[in-house]
Length: 157
Image (cartoon, rainbow, N blue to C red; front, side, top):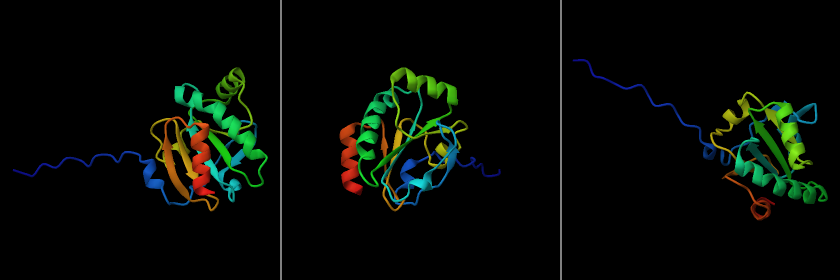
């Protein structure tokens, strides 16, 4: 009899595999029109967040992101939050953000999930903490609170 071998199991996405790696640059449509390119923020600490309007922890963290973004806007080369919406249309995202009164956060639209796939995102929300040199320091799984943002920023400067 011939030996029976099973096909290899597909590799599950793993955001942890990105730790200590340089960012995977991307350009996506921006919610406010134009294009958002990740490398354009190099030199600043970046919180790269993947989210969706239907995700409850994502909904809960948006006000903290808005407050943090406002605080950091007053700091020269302050941290920036880039919120990458996964799989939804511009209209759906605009309607949702307007309904909850959130603004002031750069929003990129990853309708096809291409960038989320590159980063190994399989669950929402996940936020990648990226230092000023463009190195991914760690992923944060789940809801991010204002205290979390401040603690991560203190770690990466």
